[in-house]
Length: 246
Image (tube, rainbow, N blue to C red; front, side, top):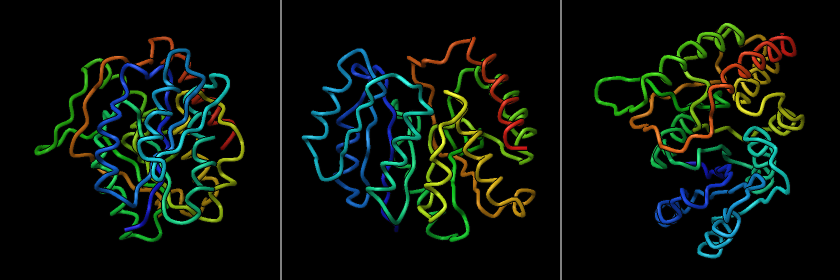
């Protein structure tokens, strides 16, 4: 199984970050490392992350950003740094609240291990029998509307662009896909997929480079920083992405 460096964007997570869960996972998964990006937090997040790094300096790195640039920029800078730390294998990003359990990393790695053509595998929150997907009804239905709009924008039959659990294969073209800042602070996932689709246009209609994995478990965690206004801004960002990449 390939080694992975997982970017974890953090903004004001001092009270929510479950350091012990990350450390326990690393104890039994020596091929995985975490790069925590502090996105200009105003609380004690950076101190918590530095303590976490001291507990396991071989598998934990911290990238402090001086100013808050939004989740998209934190992930982008984290991924660029992760590629330097992990020049082969896989890099990815994971939500700090662990709505997706860390055990799902192995599921995503397994897809990349077994299918060499795939460049990005995404966790997908699909409510199926035998899986535990706990999501508030309002966010679920808003999410389905957004997912339909994102699918039309990308011209891809994608079910869930916004799940915060993704893994990418480190290839020669990946740094070039990350060099430019995203136009959106929140729906950067859509723009990242658009960049891949633009890079591989012949595969865009029936892509071999992307895979959605139905997660076994996902749970809404209290404390989300998304506000109602962000859904309106997301619609504007979709139009911008459509203009830029089509």
